[in-house]
Image 1 (cartoon, rainbow, N blue to C red):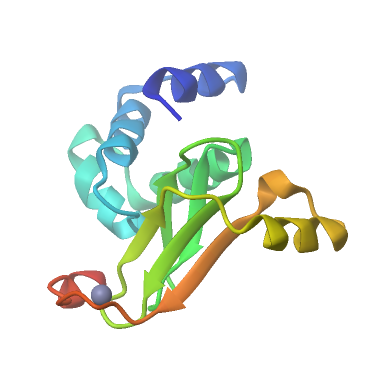
Image 2 (tube, helix red, strand yellow):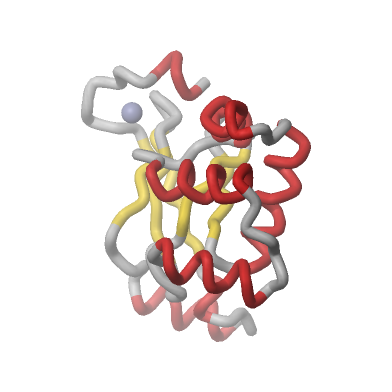
Length: 143
Ligand SMILES: [Zn+2]
């Protein structure tokens, strides 16, 4: 999902591109990993957006279908811009709490099973919880 795609979706949904809202979209696009509402708020506070407005915008963006909300180990929602409209896959590290979006579609057999249950394949978001092999430098940062 590119900046242009996102701005077009916002316009099509009747959202005014205010300076704070633009700052939030930029913060989401520039995020190096999925971020919580608190973390995003710290990045857009200077643009004049308060925390409750951050939350309101994030849930609107999720409803619009270009932002994914994933539950982290601390139970907090983490937000990241979707790579595309198809199924997405991410790995949640149970040690450091980092959510790692993976540039691969979930297994086709899984997609078929999910479709067989009556779900639409486009809405398939798979998060695998696992222990990471790397040194967890981000431990305190994400808890
Ligand atoms: Zn880790």
